[in-house]
Image 1 (tube, protein in one colour):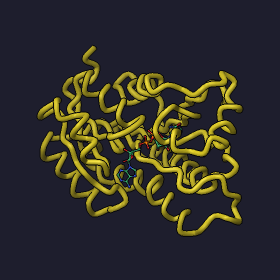
Image 2 (cartoon, protein in one colour; image 1 turned 90 degrees about the vertical axis):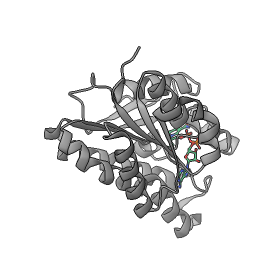
Image 3 (tube, helix red, strand yellow; image 1 turned 180 degrees about the horizontal axis):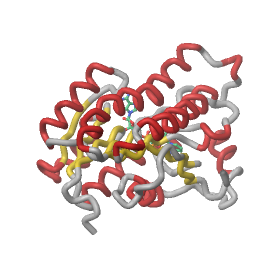
Image 4 (tube, protein in one colour; image 1 turned 120 degrees about the vertical axis):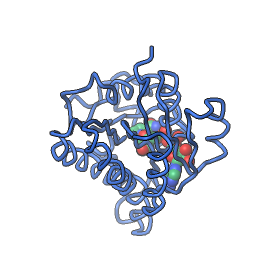
Length: 247
Ligand SMILES: NC(=O)c1ccc[n+]([C@@H]2O[C@H](COP(=O)([O-])OP(=O)(O)OC[C@H]3O[C@@H](n4cnc5c(N)ncnc54)[C@H](O)[C@@H]3O)[C@@H](O)[C@H]2O)c1
């Protein structure tokens, strides 16, 4: 029940969707959690009742200096960070072929989806190395493995997240730190609700279970990946795709 008691986690994108359920699960299982999101009001509504165990931080995750600052703030507040879960993500403009994609949109999606994983992991790794323990999880996507037509910016940014995970898994393997990614297919969240219906159908049609994953299914797998039990798997992209990816 109290898998995470005595541990400190930092969750980005905690005001909605996967980040929201992951943050609740870690808090409910005993962790102290720093919650980072654009949407400070949403954080307050969801997490104020946890009192001192939840540190609520409004942030644009693409601002590297601010990321450094708030991670120092979390370290000062809780004394350490054991777990980082990166859930911030945007699709950008979708349903476009590559020749129709603007460079501006591509840069924006990379900044939010990929650079945020770099900024946050760069900021927490020194303290994890010093304590010789850490669990980092970057949320990627099946789109990063397979490439979804009409989603160049999103797919390529998530492929970059998978590449980052492979590198970091190897680099910190001797420090007691695991760095993994998770590749969900479609999970029923506001991000999916906001996508064009045609794009969602394109994705669920490819899932052998012919359905979206649930937020509970995502939270349960994330909780295992960032637990101390997950001690011999690093640099790996876990599957959460209802059978779509068998590799
Ligand atoms: N939902 C799915 O089906 C699905 C599938 C595969 C991968 N994913 C990935 O899982 C992660 C979570 O997805 P979700 O569906 O829960 O998304 P969501 O839209 O429900 O939540 C994303 C959160 O990130 C925050 N955010 C966005 N940009 C930000 C920024 N620049 N700075 C700070 N906060 C910012 C938003 O305010 C929001 O609270 C994303 O990385 C997404 O790409 C989701």
